[in-house]
Length: 265
Image 1 (cartoon, rainbow, N blue to C red):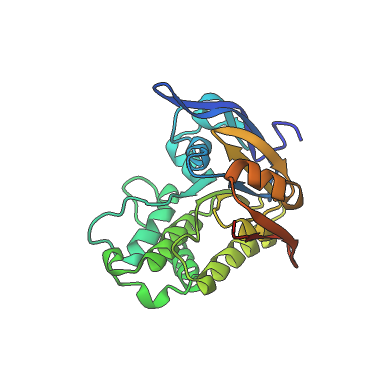
Image 2 (image 1 turned 90 degrees about the vertical axis):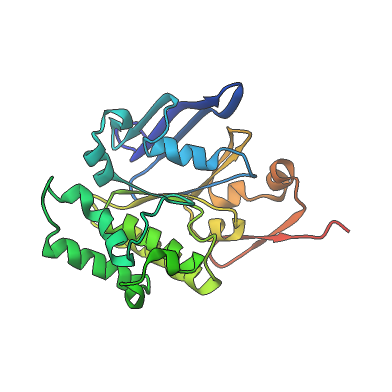
């Protein structure tokens, strides 16, 4: 895959804070419409990589989105291309669920303009698909962690961006809503227009879930790329034992390998 063909292309990406290297010489290519999940132990650089791909963190090397350097995209154009769901977004005080999700339409509203009927309809549709309609008028501060997580995703989906970056998107969700969210993202990815498919890059701690939904998995350790391939190629007992220092058993599942922790004694 050439740089121009990839939706996301990163070459030699590195991030340092003082003497600490958060990322070192990371190369990846993500095809349009692909789902890449980034895994790795705590402190591996997963969230840092997403922020670099979103153009929010200065880094060595180069990141291209749809063939264009991310640093060359104006803020509004970048927001039309890239939607990021961070682990703990900043939420304005007193904001309702609907108004927060509506922020996702900001890149399409002219300066000093107002939202259109199409903008409002797009937000209502996303809220309905994420089982949030009943919470439309609630303030975010009154919601549970799982409900807030779905609202954060709603804002990102309302952006209509071609690249969706998800940082631990299911960490606060119960198992039912985990499935709802992941199935919705996968549906949007696989049913979108062929000329502008949705591309997903997500970080996850649940390795079995990562194996079920990802086309490919990137394993980071100490800020470096140590493995990149299909779930079967990356989710191996040897790699996980080496980089997670965990004793696990990997078994075949219906949609990918399942990683089962094994007691050490």
